[in-house]
Image (spheres, rainbow, N blue to C red):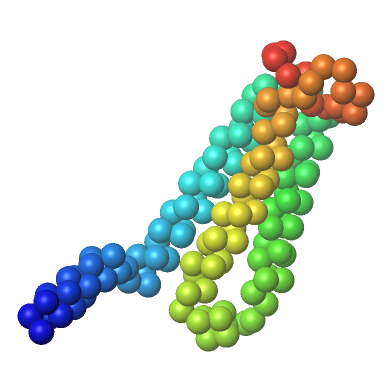
Length: 135
């Protein structure tokens, strides 16, 4: 009996030490999205710097980025269309929403990084992307 009580109290202690409040989970998910967004912005700014002489490309990139932001927002609206999201999707909605934003943002960052890392020499479809290893 004493062993059972000790095991139960250890389990309760471990559960309590690892539990988080909903607010903490919301904050962590939001922080992860903001970190991804900062990386996207750093990547975008570096492209603007590296391709500063390619004005036609930069105009197109800026337009594409504006449209990507519209896509991102529309995608999230499609995922969670309810007018009152907390009522419809529950208290975990802020975490899910931030996770979705993070996922889309990381994917966009990967797409943009191609302009920084370049593609192999000889790729006939490189378009405006530089050759890997060149400045």
